[in-house]
Length: 582
Image (cartoon, rainbow, N blue to C red; front, side, top):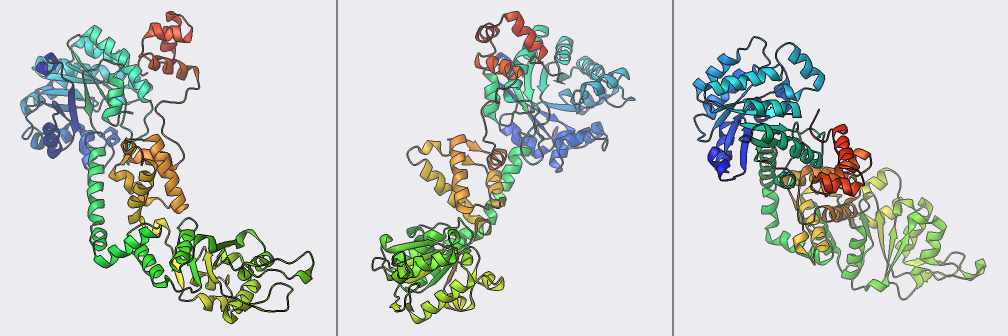
């Protein structure tokens, strides 16, 4: 690593808990590996924080897997994650054993720095605090071992650097993100502020020390690069960001691909491919079994002119379907009329359909059934029409003749009726929301459109189509969703169906144009919290932090921007703890 420092290379360490991960990290260019109990717990399916619980002898736990899996398979330096929390532990004896086993160095993990300040003070009072971890580093140096100190405060960083620790790592806490991650207590901007100040302290005390980062809000290389622009750091240590997050995403993605294999094979059949193509021509999309059945039914009734019932939840494509049925029967869009039964009374529905005779006073009104320019009539909200009105419609349908409201002379009826209902026919019958005679008229002539939650295998295609329409003029703005993000979408209930999905696509393109979208981002967008590049500025602390960020943490320019003196700015930085964590 000393040679890498001379060449000015950016170091990357992998804090892991299994041999296969050590080998993979080394192949990816890792400069060193840390054998940590937290890494082993992650491989076992637990969260990293499990290493802080009294359920294992941490040092023995690390010896068992690191000796067998890392030392024998990794050629890069391997650091031993050592705990000094045992009051009876001899740091000299532990350093002897670690050196004898063949480790290149020692890291203080799990460290007392992970505890809050009152707990750290209590541990220091009984001799097992950070001072004991420093004693371990001194013992390591005496045996020719390298040292890596996890630090959380400016005092810890100063003490570690003064001792001559080789690598000082400021840890921002447990990594955010994914299923096992904990919410980060600080933002990327705050992490940058802490890093900038800490690096100055470390370099001042020990110019030869490596200063690296780990944890907290840093979930991907872009966020790390953001910090590197304003803080002088020599490297990064990845724990969950190297194993848990990418491993979970990779396994989930591969599992999803295998899970969809049957669907992919089914779509390749000639007959179903033709039906899917037919569905696209009439304005519908999806290749699931449910949608293929819909296409098949629509094509069977195309050109028939029969009365139809199109059922399904709102937003499933019911209007598109009735328009397709009308068009496939040779009708033009202008000859299709729509009556919104759910927005008017039963009497008004009758008048809209069959008209009103002039003898009723107030002048006559020609109904849709009598107009020559109308070929098909859509009745939206069948279940909202009173049963007596439904019964009258059923009689007229059967006789193919109708009488205007208040009239005496019956007229011939040659229009096609297309009903839209929220529930399928069998449900309407069971709940008594449809007249028996009308039910008999439409029985066997129903097209039921499935909800999105009933055809989750189509969500990827539907979302891709929605994004393509939004980015047609700028393909580079297309966001890319991770497998875990897609899994989250497939688990969503989608109560708003297609309109909800299209609205989500718009938010996705707006907030992640051309970027990669992870599971956390999907969750935030679905809960209405659009991801922001920076924290909302509200308090004085936020104002100071935002100003520092805008001016590259240059105190002179920041003070001038805020209209205060450098001394006042310095005091505010100290007061709001922007120089290091407490």
